[in-house]
Amino acid sequence: MDITALTSGKKVLFDNYLHAYLAAEDTSSGIVEAFAYSLKAGGKRIRPVLTMLACECLGGKADDALPAGLAIEMIHTFSLIHDDLPALDNDDLRRGRPTCHARFGEATAILAGDALIFQALSVITAAGYPPRIKLDILEFMAEVCGVKGLVQGEYRDVTAEGKEISMDEVRDIYRRKTARLFELCMFAGARVAGGAREQIEPLVGFGTYLGLAFQAIDDILDVTSSREVLGKTTGKDLAQDKATIVKALGLKESRRWARDMTEKAVALLPAAHVVRAEDLKELALSMLKRVA
Image (cartoon, rainbow, N blue to C red; front, side, top):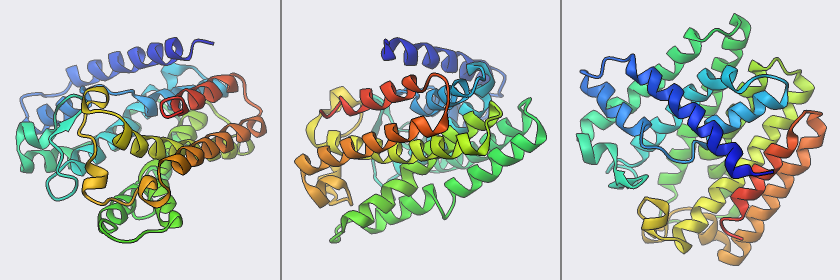
């Protein structure tokens, strides 16, 4: 299987959908211009790709998952815009270009991030999904993005800077700020396809472990890769004494932990009894190869 071709094709599908969505928006608004700038910045689009793969694994079509994938990418982009702000990580480079606040100013970036939260809700409510599926996705989104998930994870990440941290604390931060959004991808894609609870639960578990591995890999690359390769500032985690797996375990054990989380993710796939589970497995393994 050519996982690069698979994910590239879905990335193109998503990007086309995103650009069509933005073309219908009123870009004369400075807020829309700012959040469109960040949404169009590119990246791997791993979250919408996962949402599409989860849908296909349960017999749905990738196209059916596009609204859910767009809403999740909006939530992710809001978190990046706010995470880059001077009050948090104070980054001026994201995906190889100036961050939102560096380009449009801090106030506009804050408001653009705020707007994306509500745009995400609007995308789901406007989608052609049955009302029960819309409600299920919105409920899960609210849970994984609020004080039980992403926002709380970012808060714990910031407040842990400069402090002694345990691996349990690092894992909790990773779960909340990254893995819970991966869970949402798997849940939303599977729910759109009409999957049964006994199939959705192991897929959500796959998202948990994949998200943990993904964040560990990202933090390892912050130490081992370059600004040119990643398209963002590197070395800041150590400079800011952030709560990362590298700080807690060192590079060698961090790589081992990322591999362990990837293996746990893959091990859950047979329990879901889905078609094309191999796609999810290969995607997980391809992520791990970045730090192998």
